[in-house]
Image 1: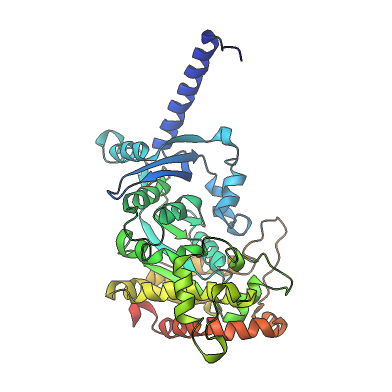
Image 2: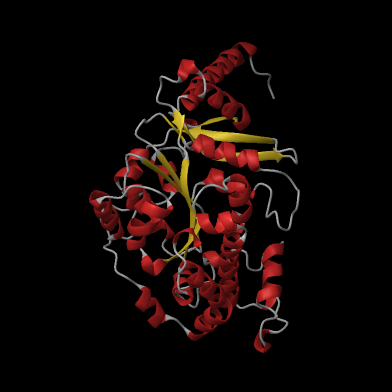
Length: 404
């Protein structure tokens, strides 16, 4: 291997340095946004070594038409941020420190750059209308709202220390979570005032620690659906083995919290299933158990303390979209909703939430169709394994806002 000519390396280093410096300034001015993180190390002392990945996102694409840009990954791709040459990598802790310094320094206060406070979080059971909720949050006031729908940085930050209830004191990710949200909320648009996050369904497994230590004063909702309907959304075909709810089936290591949940609530509940292990669960039973585990975590979070029950709200899919404009937004999330906003919400609710194409599919209610097409093995699993948590969610849902 020949040694590179030092005279050719120096200009390259200068070019990279100049590019990085320009990129850093675009980050500080909120022209570039945090699109991903690589967690290298995180400690007990709440310190972390994380690389942030930044790029300029075209938020207008989502604001103008949420159904065409239903997920954060769609926005990243359409903004050209899946091309590494358009991104800037930097130490997240260093970037956050400088960004906060500038945001709090009089010299920079004349600019419109600021971090939007979080107005609410959306957790969900999966395949239950949560993307529709995210689209409606974006549509009801697109100029003032920024909505992250299943973004990578936040869920990675939440998962960085595992599920605290089992893996006690492995590390402390509170600072990382706060810093990620702070950077994702930064904007140079003075009209943007509200920030919402719709998490991935797996986020329900981390919501207890997240909402009771990092965002204990922020309202949240958990969206769920009828057991048979939600399972038919996951496994519409009996021959289907790659459903989202089956991703961890047969894989090692087995989630210790899931194993504990199955042993306590499913494997030994009732004579027919006495002694059944995770390994022996059919795909329908495993799917139902996985969904029940997500719902159970939401229920535990709600019951954690009085603040959790006041800030949390359980939302049945069947009550969408009206419950959003009549109860969730104006009362639970504390946002003004007039006739114009209601029209926008109804408009986005009239099309398929994950359209992604120029020709929209008009939304047709599918609950009855799913129930009619359900097959016996799925119905039995839904009733036996998932229905108990559904009944508990229904009871909490009836309490409405502030747990009343």
